[in-house]
Image (cartoon, rainbow, N blue to C red):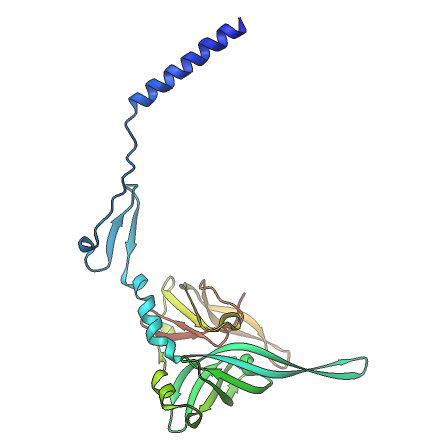
Length: 256
């Protein structure tokens, strides 16, 4: 009896499945592809396979490459060679270290190239080495610093740079961070992990975000910072946060 009922049930399911497959229309597997010549000028709307889903391509999304090409000559990598001093059981030990950071060329006068970075990037430096966009390395000296704002200006002598290098570099355009809006797209450029310049993108996540930071003397200070979801890594410190006009509207200072 069990075999009979099982066989009948199996046959019924098989026939019902076949009828169901015949009654359903074949799935539309074609993707609606819009030819390039029909897209025209951005922004353009391209519909995906699902009718209720669409992807908006905007000029901002396509301009990152061009912006990076324009601003990269104003970006530099910084290596801070410093000596760490420790005391253990009354004995004083010294050990040489190197730390990586980033900087932005903000001015050029008759004798120097002026670069802004974080104060903590150049702190306790025995030697500062700056790498420019064309790969040229040059020594830099500290011109001024503000520990409370975590800002510093360093300078490279123009006499240490070739004419070709001077032609290859640029001075960054400074924007107005007071004009930023939540959700605005931004680009972060910096010497991430010490491997050289890298580019990440994101948006303005928050403004006037109060973050406690430790000063050189060990005291805690609180600064109001811009928050972004662009990927930030050690080595990005001192690097640029740019708007979609290619203007510097922030300097990377901390990662949380």
